Each structure stands twice: as C-alpha cells, then as structure tokens.
Length: 351
Image 1 (cartoon, rainbow, N blue to C red):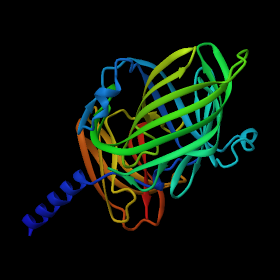
Image 2 (image 1 turned 120 degrees about the vertical axis):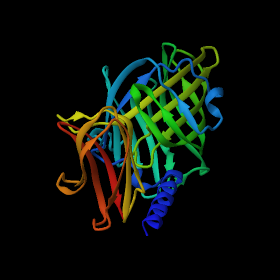
Image 3 (image 1 turned 135 degrees about the vertical axis):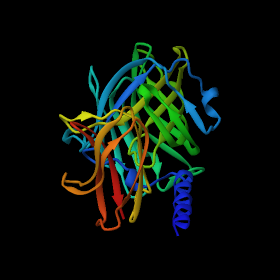
C-alpha cells in the first residue's frame, strides 16, 4: 500500500511540474495590489537574441538603474471624465513624478485606456488597447487595433497627435528564469507583443503635421499567481522624418510589495502556487536563502488566520509544501510565509 501511495505522489508531483500556466481573470489587477519595480540596464540586449522561444533564461548580472513602487488605485477623481471606461489605475511612484496607467479590468480582458505623466507624454485611447485576454496560456494569441490621441515628446520637441495602432500578442514560451538579486522562477509564461503605432503629430512651429512611427516589441513573463509580469523587456524605436530615430530598451524586474512596516523575506526562488484557482490541494514551492524557523499561513482578505499549512525549521534551498484547502469557502485568500518579522505574501483563489 505504501508503494502505491508513493507512486501516486510521484505522479502527482510530476503532473504539477509539467502543468501549463493559464492566466485567468484571477490574475487581474485589483485596487490595493502593490509591487516593486526595479529597472536594470538592458542596453546590451537585442530583440534577436531573445526572440526565439527557450526553456530557460539567465538575465542575472545586470546593473540596477532605479527602483519604484506601484499600487493599483481607484481612478483619481480629476481623471474620471478623461478615462470614463477605466475602473482602476496603476500608479507608479517615481522620484520625479507619479505616473498613471488607466485600465478596465473585466472577467474576459484587461484593457488599457491610456497613460499620464510618463516620459513620452500623455495618451487617451478612445478605442481601448487590449493588454490581456482570458483565459491565456501557451500558444494563445490575439490581434487588436486601437486608437486615440496623445502628446509625444521627442528630441526636445513635443506635440499633439492623433494615434492609430495595431498589436499582436502571443504566449510563445514557458521557461525557467534566473534574474538579478538571486531571484529565480521554475516556470514563467512569456507573452510577446509586436505593436506598430502611427502618430500624426502637430509640432509647433512646423506648418504641417508630421507622421511618427513607433515599432515596439515587448516580452513579458508571468507566473501562475502573479497579477503583474515578473519581468518585462521592451524594445522601442520611434522615427519622425526630419527629427531622426530614437531607440530605447527597458528591462523591468517586478516583485510583490510587502505590507507597510513589514520587512520582506528575501527568497532565492519566488513563491509559486499551483493550482491557482484551486478547490482541493495546493502545491506551494519557494526557495530560502538561509535556514530559518518559519510558518506558512493561509489568511482571509481581512488578515484573519484561516489555517496553518506548515510550522517548523527549514534548510536553505528549494522547498515544497502541500496543503489541503478543500474546506475553504470560495473567494480570495493570502498565503503568507513568516520568518520572525519578515514575510512574503502570495494570493490564492478558491473556486
């Protein structure tokens, strides 16, 4: 009997390891979500070397340029009329100014309605840009057209424009990631976006509008539980006749922001929960940088302890915990790894 149970456990573990990542509306932004972004110098990277799908990637060893926090907030009252379809905003708190991206989160889609105060100006999408559609898994794809108005800053000049664009998105790889500061992910789903944006720009004192063309190829990697890409690499090139071409590479590594006043537990491998959503048993994997006494709790969304999945001392390295959640009511929960005053949190959906 023990041999049969052991064999079943091995089969179950292999199934979990090979399971496909599927993004659903549970991955949508919600007001109150927080995460930290760290921008690294990705100027040495090229589209060509990243374009072909892979099973593993190592992006470690890059130089950090800046970091900032992000929070999902309600659309500021002064912007409701400008972005009437948005039901939340992603606020990036940067050193020089706050930046906003305006989204509509629905059961089927995450739609972008524009941005404000970014380095490239402001934009209002009169026809929203489909950022994600659900469910989305390996080989899923869609093409979307969007349009609107924008202000465009380029080589010391700025102007207003009418904008049309098309973007094609495809989930083209599942790969393990090695990132900076010792962060690794066993499996992340990559979404490749190829966009062409055409702006007809009025630039003072030019007598006639000029046409600016921006080509963007971006790669975003998601884990099963993340509501934000754990890694984003964006290659953009804007050309305005008579003004030249401006190119940029952005490398942004994201991580969950701990609750205010609580120190973050540094992990060697970030938390992965599977399946999520779940209604029976979950598999929790993570990595510890050092041996430590810890506790793994499931909390309700109002912070109350629901159950403890594990309590004890663990060694440094990869860890795996199985937990029964079949008795939990449907809804959102937080799985919290606590080591003294330090902790890491991941969201769990029970369906």
